Image 1 (tube, helix red, strand yellow):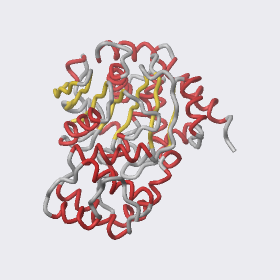
Image 2 (cartoon, one colour):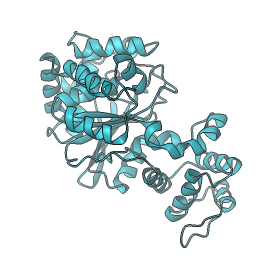
Image 3 (cartoon, one colour):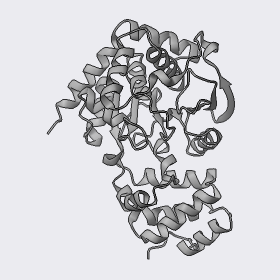
Length: 349
């Protein structure tokens, strides 16, 4: 068994630590995670440790160390100028079954001048993941890292399909599938953007994760991040309730709440945003981008305004919303869909 330098913890010792509800230290967690990602830890021990971490509750330090290793093993996308580079991503698992708000937000945010490096996957707990709706729109999601980089350079956006960028995850996939419960890996996806986007709008499925994830991003050296949780259970900025926000900017974290009324919007239930599959999600997404007066358009405008603020294109969410409304009304946001389809299809096999 390979050991990282100066490491003394074994898998059995780590398991004992979780049973005793004691923290696994940063260097120890790096070592354990590398063993998992290399396929050097047995399925039984891998399952025991990630379950033990869940039961004792993962700490900020443990999550940051695990994310660091996942980033090490990723197939990276190189983006030269990242000042306005942003990821718009959710943990999923919120059970709301809404259309793909973050994917619609990507098109608006890109049309308004940010560069979007969107990291996503197929739906697991949702009816339609970002990969599913993009395929329904005609986007080729199976791009190599250098093609994604070219997509960001030429269209202002790129989609990084998680399995293409995290091949080492295959070493834990069967364990996760058989366990069938949430583990640390469910919250690592949004922390491991393969393009290293320094700015992020991240939705989470539980209020407790707001403070945790924003502080993990702080440790990972991110620049401007807004972690959001809608109090109606959404992993987006919500129209149906207050949204809890954890904001990292200039190295400092602050936590606060925002409300639809703060931005001149009416509070409305997200029930009208529910979809049964990727085709329904596509229809609702295009309705919003075609400037059809509807709740979908309002929630996309709100989330795009927040993403533009995270991307440092504007100085406030309000300014971001004004810009988002303009690019939706002008048709520029809708044009971005066709632009991404055209660009990605040239690489179709």
